[in-house]
Image 1 (tube, rainbow, N blue to C red):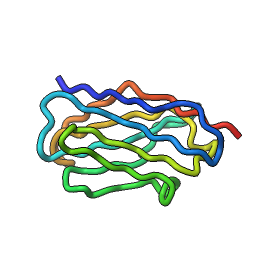
Image 2 (image 1 turned 60 degrees about the vertical axis):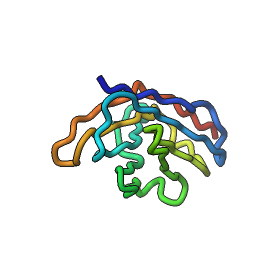
Image 3 (image 1 turned 90 degrees about the horizontal axis):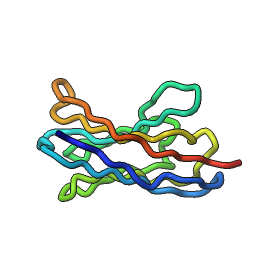
Length: 119
């Protein structure tokens, strides 16, 4: 079974920075996408950023220019460097793996890590 473990969440003041990590263990296919989603209180889960095995990235408009997704392919680990954090960035951040191509992959989710941004 594939498992994802997130870390790095915490409390930060507006304007601050935080770095999230997600390590994937198990049978990770060569073609896959890893990324981050978040769910703020009272809101639906939304995409934050993803990166596939080729390095192609996708960002939510709300985080472009502030967040950077990266990876260590050898360790199947994805990172999210968050800067200039805003109160609107608060929520539970979930790591997701799509194990396979976008059109046929199987999704796996981490347990989530809490990000709190104070005013």
